[in-house]
Image 1 (cartoon, rainbow, N blue to C red):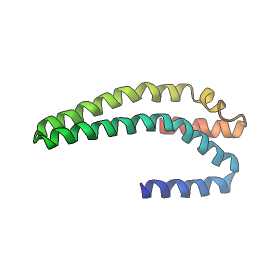
Image 2: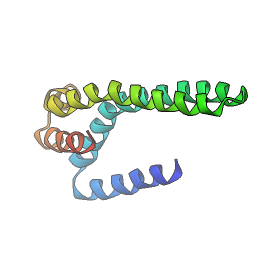
Image 3: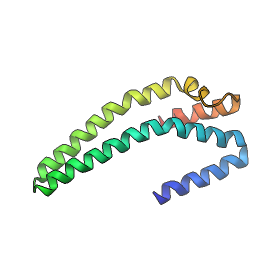
Image 4: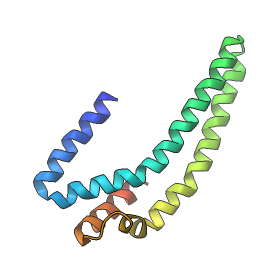
Length: 114
């Protein structure tokens, strides 16, 4: 968590020194990226619960199987979202920004993270 946050603080400082539009693009990208992040967090919480229950029941094989199944379902669930973001990034970004530089930079960011 701390390293992840530090990276984005440094990235924000670097981008704002280049142009405020790039910092705005990062913010727009984060808003759209949050959709996929939230889905992954939901799978993580649900998986932790199921794995914890199987582990508490002294069934480690079932816990591992549950974790594997959850990982497969999470990947299959997030792929359509990632494809949609990658293919429809310009339209999604324009919901948040109209500036051409912001839109172009945010679309690039989303295609990289997708």
